[in-house]
Amino acid sequence: MDYQDIRFELADGIAVVTLHRPDRLNAFTGRMGKELTHAYERCDADDDVRVVILTGAGRAFCVGVDMSSGEHTFEKQASPKFSATPTKPAWEVRKPVIAALNGHAVGIGLTLALHCDVRFAAEDAKYGVLQVRRGVMPDACSHWTLPRIIGMERAASLLLTGRKVTGAEAERLGMVLQALPADRVLGAAREMARDIVENTAPLSVGITKQLLWQSLGLDPDEVEFLETGLHHVLMGAPDAVEGPMAWIERRKPKFTATISRDWPKWPDLSQIHDEEDDEGG
Image (cartoon, rainbow, N blue to C red):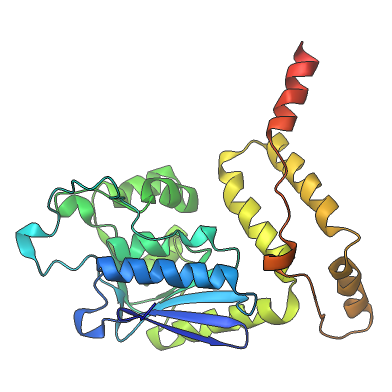
């Protein structure tokens, strides 16, 4: 894809995807959504990508949907293809996705960042899900992501009022991992990304991420069933030999399993429920 509203850079295992409409404070467009989806799919498929960083160009991350069309901004959508989540969710990328919120992130700018695994924020920037103040409602699965990140009551205090908070308050709420001066946000994201690239097994991280997001809708028995089945995939494989040996020999590990080649068939949860039915019958 010929990117116009984003930029894509890959170096040393880290893909940096930059929302790139700095003259409009990276206001979200339909094209940006399509380009971000393409970039995420590219990152998921490419084994050279170990970590993704999502950030913005200039002094903002994303100030929400582009409202330059005024009264037509939220006009009725007749297309059956319309979705309130206009991009591939970052949680579907089998690599860690870190949001470096270098400046303001409001509306869909914030709800898309909630798809990411970790968020760093600029301490003095503004963050909020403002849609109820614009006559619409929160989008991009934020009714699912935000309560799970910060709890139901705190999520309600943001979603129902549409109020904005600073990065420092977002950290206190637990919405971001850390709030920093704006010029340090991308560096903090890169530091975490480098740690993952240098010290972790790609397949182990991908499996862990997928189970982590899936676990939000599972009970403990279901999680234990999946953890056990996936341990059978990883234990005894070359990476499970390399990890301990690298530690014993005090060197960086050289993991060889890849997501594109070695991704396992996911354990079938219906089996645990079939067993429960048999025991009950």
